[in-house]
Length: 189
Image (cartoon, rainbow, N blue to C red; front, side, top):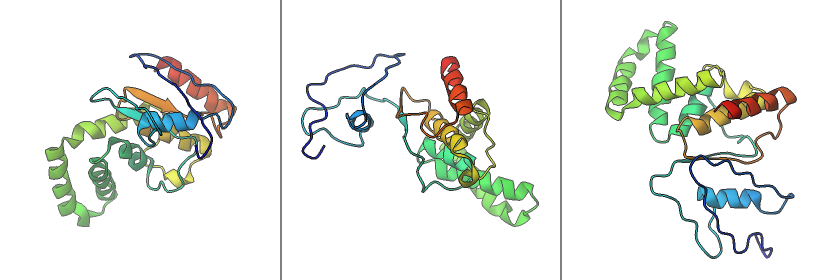
């Protein structure tokens, strides 16, 4: 990294069902290794080989300051391209449920687009992960505590049912209650 060698002659395989912990001092290259596994950074030499069709998700160390919207929107964003359509349908449905009939035509068009894209199954996946992580989909993400934001980011990572889930210092900025919850969640997952 720069002129500092972080990783040299590393070779490993992550078998299905494995739980792997990477432990080392600050600055040793753990986060850089995660970024290489995720395809966000490339090694200076050698290669990272991923199985075809691999679904990978990660929980970053820090909560991105750019995330906005409802908890549902942030979690749905983990689904990729269909996420914006799903979030739009969810927002229009909420407005209609609260008496705004002016959105009915747009809601109908969005519903048709959702059907064509197979979005109903994705909406169900979002609702399931929200329920499992005990999150209110209607809550404003920006107004949540740090621990709740981390839980939302975990839901965002899990909604696409990844084959590999990279947790980079997952307990950063969490209180004891949230850490205990996370430990219990992963034991049962």
